[in-house]
Image (cartoon, rainbow, N blue to C red; front, side, top):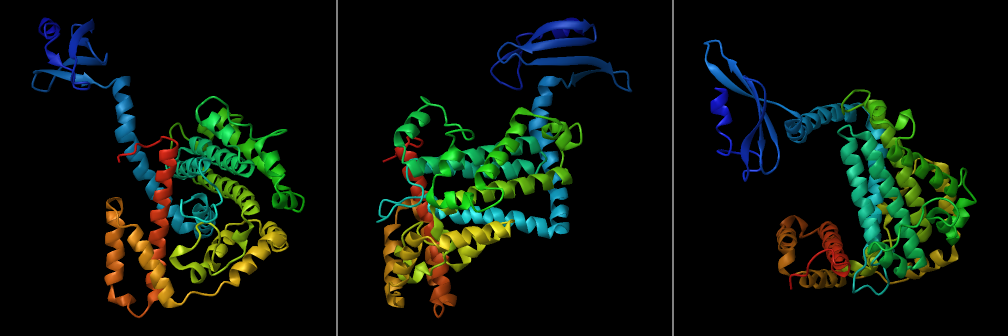
Amino acid sequence: MKKKLENISGEVPCADCLSGEMVFLKKRSNEHLFFQCNNCKKIDEIAITENDKGEKTLVLMVNEWDEVIKEIRTGLINNLLYSSEKLLKWSDDNKELLTKLQNSIAAWKEFQQLFYSFSGDKKPSLIGIPWQFLIIEADRALFASRSIASIGLYKESYKALRSFFELSLFGLYLNIYQDSDFFNKWFSGKRKTIKITGNDGVIEKLTKNKILSKINNSIEPNWEVRANSQYSNLSKYVHTQGRDSSSLWLWQHAHQNFNIESWEKWILTTINTIETVIIAIISIHPRSLIPIDYFMKFGFNYPAGLFFDEQEVQIIKSSFLDKRCLEVIQSIVERDKETINLINDTKKIKDLKPEEIEETKNNFIDSVKKPEYKEEINEINKILENKLFANNKTVQWSILLSIQKRIMRNLSLGQIGMILNLIKNED
């Protein structure tokens, strides 16, 4: 049997890489042999045993190489199923904390419409090209954080949360100072990211903003202390600084699993992190706390990223755990003359008549009749053909407005990708 096995060298294809062949490597005994692929170098361990009928049988033994595949496939799937079950039960039993997390992420999403600029805008959106790239990256990092936290990888989720925090603040800083040269050098890898904390760091520089400076001097702890503390806390998980930031402590097991205590700690940390970022965004875009019925002024031609309506403002306000902090910020915003003048001037604009809104709607639909928006156009046509909206145009408008925001977001992402050479132009 041993001789027969040794003679198969060069004849059995590798089941993993498919392009190599299994070659006899060594033996531990006459019944225990090792083979190695001459291409990918995978090692198979084979034992020769007897079954209950006394027949010789080959057994492929699991080794460390196979454990990698097992972790990726079976391990992750089993962990996801286990965590999903636990997370669902936790959600049913912890509605209040779940609502706080949902409010926080919903508020961040409301600000997304501020982060895209469009070529037709008369006024730029809050975060213009190219540094809105950082805000988009931050959004992906936040998504990653909550995704991996939900399956028990808490330490890694904090790393992603720190990335969200620093990318958000870095993007706001570049926008305020309009530092294209810094961005271009950083993006090309010729310059390191500016430090977040410390003297002349991003946090300190942001506090020089007129409104954030007032907020910073009016809340306790002030925004600068809060932001520095938040960044320092998140950094501990990157460097495993102390017991509480270690994987074993967070898991409470020798392997990753859903753990209620660690999950709830992540939620509170995430809410505070998002709130700290939102305070900085509000200081740059104070109109986000003063509602205006912008749709009646602009219809489907409304200037992207300039105003929020009553519902959007309430979502942002609901994200604050520190209601006293919100009251202080609201008071500062409402005393800012530039903001109030802009709001009042906008409110003086005459509301559009229904037929005028219909005209802006038709102009919008005509502008997106392109092959890349085939799916959205089909969705729009179904809404237009739905008789339920014949006598209720406002509902139809609201649904179409959501589709418009989605299309404009994708269009803006495409512009960013083209400018930064992140995607290829197929034209």
